[in-house]
Length: 187
Image (cartoon, rainbow, N blue to C red):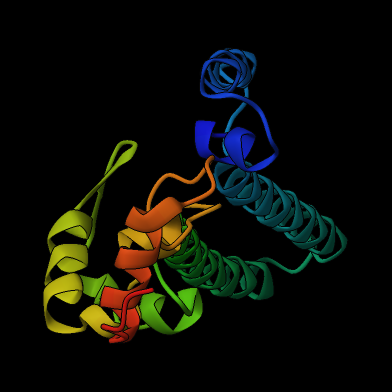
């Protein structure tokens, strides 16, 4: 949890700072859920591909006596395997890019799916654990379609009109509210 979330739960500033630091320390060894989902999806796909290939090899063993047919079947299977590999790599790239985009947008936009669809994935390049071009596209979208993004105030939990809160408000709080709502009459 973040410091602001702890404050929203009623902790003091000092307690919230300590609790946020302890929470961050505790979570250091964990991988983000998006990364886990990405790797889990890739693992499932790889296991399915291995099972499919095992089945193909079994079928080849059954037809081993027919030399010409066997050569044709091997060529067909090799072409299918090449196509399957390319499809798998494309799907893995799409999953990786989608995961990175959603991670970059997390909590910053009103509709994550809508904004994620605006990214041009074909212009993004995966370089190890880094996505080249992601920050540039995000910045461009923030500038050209700012209405899709939450403001700083919307991203902060516990935001209160009129300042930091914690007091009765007094005349200064009433003056601020009057200025906001256009009420200029004083007591």
